[in-house]
Image 1 (tube, one colour):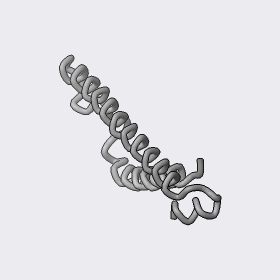
Image 2 (image 1 turned 135 degrees about the vertical axis):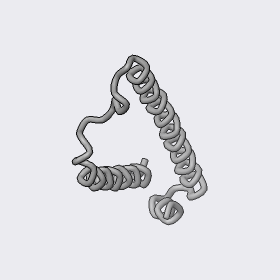
Image 3 (image 1 turned 90 degrees about the horizontal axis):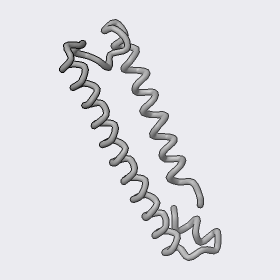
Length: 93
């Protein structure tokens, strides 16, 4: 796909392929670092809450009756983010 679009645009396919690979590597690195930072922040919140005698579930926003709806909302959010990432990764430039 990258080679054919580069040929149509009159660009060097190898150069365009290398650019796409670097862009993908940078994007993946950002996801890994972001996930790590969020994990550390969540761990700190849980440790502070449980350590101070607070709730066993400090991040719970709703009760257990919301579990079924939460699964479908989570699936929809995940699918939407996947589509956004795919669109961004395949964008020209």
